[in-house]
Length: 353
Ligand SMILES: Cc1cc2nc3c(=O)[nH]c(=O)nc-3n(C[C@H](O)[C@H](O)[C@H](O)COP(=O)(O)O)c2cc1C
Image (cartoon, rainbow, N blue to C red; front, side, top):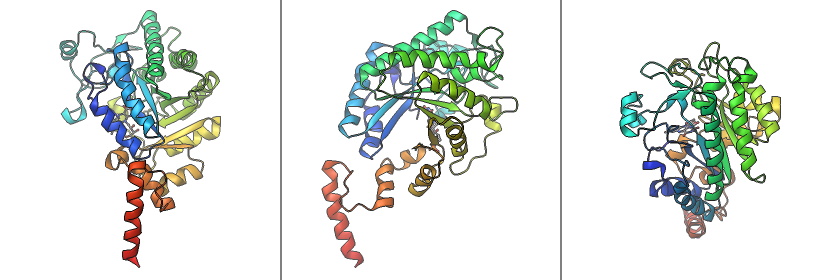
């Protein structure tokens, strides 16, 4: 989840503690916030990055700590596209003007498949040339190589939420007439090519996740059936896990959302898993241990991702385990904590008898 806490794109103490606490909390895999593959591709001013070699070492420190705690960590690689340049949510979340973006960094700009703004208040993106498309493919490739050097276990490609790659997928934002627009096949081309470039340089033994918005939530937009076609293509390339989210293409789609509720995106994950056989991850309003367990055992998903609940309780995984298993030895807790928790629990149990 975006932190907007990395001036210059450099991970720092914030990321070490913020992500490290989830490792202590028993997460199996931690996925970083969307990490920009280029300065142009930043969503907000202080997004984390992997667009230069200097970003590797600070990330390595975070990765090493997470590994010491026994967890795995993946980096989500993203490019904001036409949704580049927004204030953080606690500062209104509004779109910056093109001049404000230039004042912050002359390199920063909105780019996209077609000059169609993301919504009211957003400037039209610069229509990407074929050479721009090649450039972004190379940026993903180079960022993937740096991710490996930093020691990440997983890459998650961020192809969702209306950012650059989604904007190519959806007919609402992509009105190109060349090989990257028009038919479903052509609109998927950029996503498929990026995935192939990253798969080529990412070690075979390390998996790749891909997050998509399974639907735009807009009339005439990207559909579940389109997602299934995309997943089949990504599966051929060697993408291992589909992380099933939704929405985010335009403000209009935000106003016509997929109905929110507990586990509201699980049906998307279930459908993708059933129709393609790929491993899926469900996300969105998965709140407690039993709910998560039910998603896994009912065929809703192979993995569950916990977002805001993990902010509420960074020890969510270990607490979920406690709820489901009540292991009196606290076996999976950190070495420095488990003995004390075990003694504490034994004492608490004597109070109950
Ligand atoms: C503060 C915040 C930042 C987020 N940043 C990202 C992000 O960087 N990449 C992403 O794919 N989703 C991002 N999301 C969406 C979450 O990953 C997640 O899909 C969403 O919050 C629904 O899951 P939850 O109900 O468990 O929080 C963000 C959500 C929040 C609340």
